[in-house]
Image 1 (cartoon, one colour):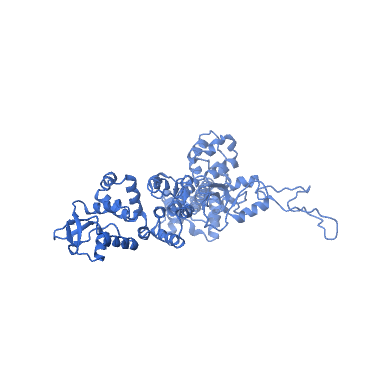
Image 2 (cartoon, rainbow, N blue to C red):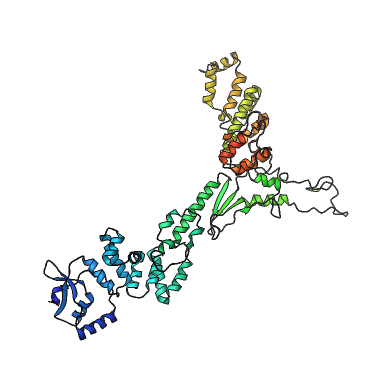
Length: 551
């Protein structure tokens, strides 16, 4: 049947791009031979005819100003008929097929099999066309307009972020790059999944996994499984490195994740021997230092690699290396400028070197090796500092309780130094209450202290209440006066060991001479297992006090 052109309206057309040359060729054909294949239409409620398939023929008829065109009435889904008719003719762009196929798939509620049957396509073709929806609009337009080939569009679909696709598209079109050239270019931006240090479970179905893309596209970025989402790969890698670093904090005191952005060289490899070695004794001492640790690398090709025995204090390290390698001393010669008396530094009376690791630094307060004073805050953790201070306070109070005369002397020293305010009024009042000492007035208090002979006891008790408020150095000075043996008051236990890292535990065991009494494999266990092994070893810890707890 024929209908007048004015009664026909255009319906849904999956084709958005009409090649001008092809349209001119079709128009010339219709002018010479007429419309050989009727236009598929469906009559609407208004009596008009909506085009289901044949938009190009209809437009050519309009160009030729034809009055009537041949049509045949069809019934069915408008989108399906339009897509099938156009795709079967094989002159429809894959980008246009993508948008139309996605619409059909939505109508089929995502049923790939059902949609493929309706379209007369293979499931593979349907999946590949729908997968092109990952392309940016500019990429799809370029494909529809035949500016790029399908293989290039499939490659660009693997690139995350539409703006990145658009930037790549500009270079591809401007330089007329081939599919092979684009493939090589994008391969440089991918990451091999087999080298990933993170859990790849989520990658199994990710559209940026080239192994997944192989079932969607004929063009692949690479033959192996690669990730084409560099930002996601980098983020997951960094997260995995941070998790590894967090786990290492049980073993060593300081851990740092190092990437290419970390340009400052503020750490060095700690070695025992060689030109940059610190010596065997110092090397062991460094294991208990707060600046001892490890790094987790995030540099290309070394992602997730751990490097142990790292020193994060370059100045201290330089001092220790210098101490381990003292400058040679030239023996004095006769002459007016010769040194005639006194032994040379670093030499004993026989001219032999007497310096050894740990002995050259006895005057370096706060050094991480042997020191006449306890290590300061930069060398031990805040938890150990607090633990040690509590230990010192407890020992001082017990010493005063055992020797009230010394307690009175300490109280006088506090008063003379203007530190009487450090005594705790409320704790003193509780002592007065305990011994029923009247404090209603100054006179009553003095009289009751005399009558009950409480002057000495109250003086010592008052001094004892001051320790919680005294400065670190003040408590240390009082302990030097009292001269207690910490081993009489303290014995190593699990609570103390849990405050240390595995490296510090090993250093303490070495220092106290108990490492050889333990099986070497216990030091490779988790910290919890290591602590348990030490406490169940049967070793007598009496009198064994680590240097960092000493006053």
